[in-house]
Image 1 (cartoon, helix red, strand yellow):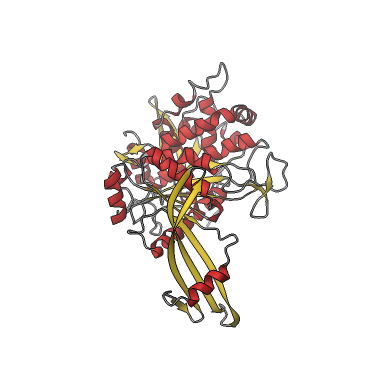
Image 2: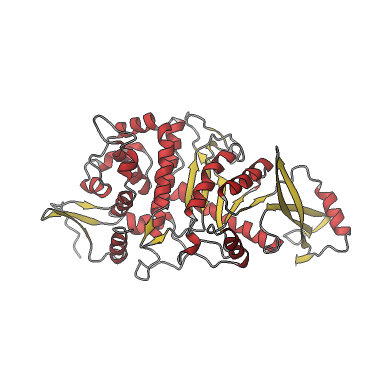
Length: 479
């Protein structure tokens, strides 16, 4: 068999046809009208083109400003995103440096517009828990920027120099409401009440009618159905966070926001024992004849119980309960008998109604919170968002805010294409990773054709994703 003969074809090809769908989404939210009237320019490239260009790069897994140079001579990149001109790398960097602070709120408005879209007559399917609550998972994660002199880089909890952004995910599908960059040394709970002031109203607005959509992603449980009937305000929210957010101030802030919004916003936040005398608690439980122990294996047993607690901050008092789990080990995992029993005490503070949610259910709901670690991974690996491109903190903050928009755009593309019966063959899953969306939809070969005053995007005859690509393209033509 002979080797190939290499030949440069006399027409344009693109290996990123999926950007046409991204451009379609940005056209649907009319991003030009969101940006240009408020941030007009006298001459040069419009600020809407700056933002669309960078969002296009992020959807391809690139955050470095220099990556735009590879797109400047690509006619498809400009046409797919509706650009009048593609900026140079210095222009992109300088414009984002100049407007970084004033574009923080703009990025939030763009994100809210994307998440508020109706596609095919349906709201975005964020994914409801089987119990009927819409989860709102918050956390921080470490970005390793070691060996740099970037502004506010510090020693993180992960033992690396970098940043610790605060992130909030709505629903079980991993839609990002906010990715707020923070200095590496900032504690998880510090200033989180300000993030909550932004995120909870947005979550409440987006889920206002989510419970009525047939594609809401989960069956409603008895407790949530009763809550919805009582409030009439859509799907109830469940705020979940780890022990880094165990703060009475924070929990009272959630309660205040719930009252202001007129919505049910329950929370499960893991308790931090701090100086609690674990041995004293264990001794009391072991000596109590009413304690119910469950044996998990030889030499390991545990018991559960719950107590009411009052969370106080200033004049605010919030009634909650705390679910406790005490684990006793007398034989280690290798089968070695221990000289003295080992006790581990854990707890979870919650406002979920005790009549509808047992201690076991509360713990199971918190364990499901661990799914959000996969979403962190998608930011850091699939989108390559670890080494941030600027030395300026404000610019990097804007980069993270736009990365949240890009993740949601990719999530929507995947949700409306890769779950269809005629989608490219993949194993059964509730959602698709961002990497899969990029591989199957973004990095797609196509030919750009100009004919009869029209532009045609030609996909290959052997393209297995053509049908879902075409179908979603037409879905985006109408609300």
